[in-house]
Image (cartoon, rainbow, N blue to C red; front, side, top):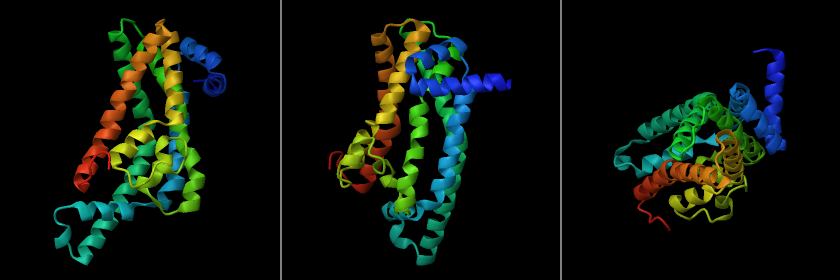
Length: 248
């Protein structure tokens, strides 16, 4: 990849955010995704490096131990060792995720988009679908950087409170005492997620020639499935472990 290509790909990524119609036309024409994925990965690593020392893994681990069946049998030493181990594992997990999660998210989104639009009666090229996913997901993938000022100010930050730090989603305006399910559903209604949904819908409509309505239905159904499987289902399991009702 030449310096000129890198510059043009970077300009395309910026254009998608600043002038979506022009930017997405470039994405569909060029069908290049590497630079957009690298931008998202660099942002993710930067976020992890700044946030991990300020996240309260100990509090989250302590809550998990209290919900466990053997909580009453743990000695103070065993409890402290378990919490320290959870802190180390949590830190490593965040660092590892920061390096691989953006690319994995883009690849997974591209695969499901490719399948969904095939089912919808279009014939999307996978390379073009990957490019649309890489650029369309940029708002959602870059948005964690906006959490850093709040993390610096409120450190140590409870992991469960992360979705409430940036008032870009409905959960930030709801009482923290609501059930995990209600808060997870509310957190899904996020400004940056909706921005990404709009960009992906526009890009896939351009790429496949599908009508905006058909593209919106295909992308919307995928988003709903992702919310249920990756947000609401784990939250429901957490609520069950705490003996809470879904709406409490």
